[in-house]
Length: 220
Length: 285
Image (cartoon, rainbow over all chains, first blue to last red; front, side, top):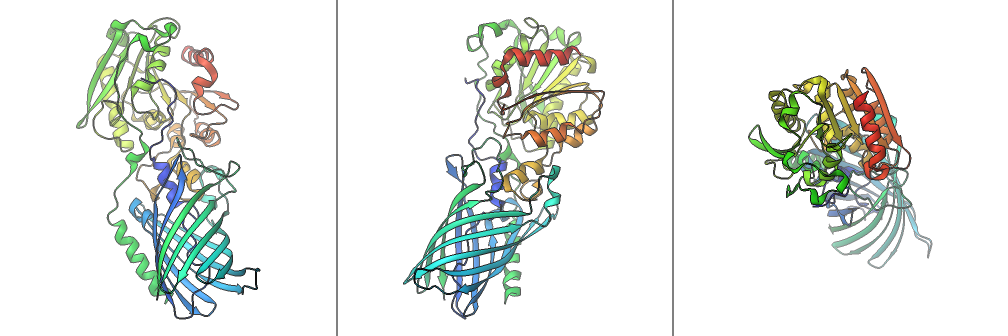
């Protein structure tokens, strides 16, 4: 028998809550699609918990509505499995073309909507972000900054809410004809300490959480 | 186009949620137990009279809850009994040292001591799922104590960490023997706080579970005496939110023992001597 304080490493309820954490999903579109082009994709995110990670599944569709603007919508399947409907939508707009080594810039705006199927509690989180990317042949490298805006921060108990929930990421995409593969490293919510009972959340300087995300998409 | 896309995605999401299964059980870290309660596993100063170690079991709904009682059964009708609600570890095994410490407060078996495994912990059957199962398990143990003659004025309920989730509703009128002296050691505060600390957003816990608890609200409805013990560096049950919950208590007496830079392993950090001093002072108050 052991009589030391036990460090439980199993999946806990609070670990599951991290699935709904801000920006706990990969960046969908970095470079706008061509006009009229569709992209349908699936994403797998793995924010880190203890020595492992949590699987976060999502699906999305996007369409290039003009040469420099793409709209997208997505659903977080993992959230659905936990009992909440979680959908997102938005647009990505080209801001500046790539010029040699100077990266292209795109700007994204959108929103995340979550609703509990238990008591129908509803939350809407607008989001905005900027992507810097380099595109050469089938390769796209990107660095992105994004923030969710919490308009209901005051509903956080004991007055601990924050209006902004930012994230920073770096990724690589291989886009060739009809297929695109994505991988992204993300630092989540580095402006606050993420506390998961009886679990260690790998972080940066004691703040936030981090994860690695993959995606596969079809272009047509 | 976006409108249709959203409609499709919303429908797809709701379709998935129609197979919603509650995952409250994920909160409970129950596991195997050996129940090998012997002096050889204890520091010599916390040895107990091995003839006073009693492993009991009680029916709780359709499940069986296992319990450890240290002391004479006759003591229950005449003496002070400590009801210990343990934290989120696999079984009572992890709290045998704590039991030995309680059994030696003042002197050996001065107080009776009882703890139990919630459903899904140790040998207790079934699965803890939330407020209802926690309340039923607690009541099964209290029914035994009531039958043995325990009364409110001689009962100390000591809730550690997860145990606070059972103690909260019990203190607010959910105990067949009304609680008059309650110790909250490193308690959580609310299910929403756990959700919000984890997600960094204003999300309610109902997004992932139907298990809703609010220990502050429970304590607001508790008239008895309260001792709160906590470390300021606790990352499992954050100090600030626990404080907000504990301070909602407006009962007959409140005292706190707060330790700077101490985490969730409070008793190990402050040492048995200091821990015993604080607990005894409260019991004798």
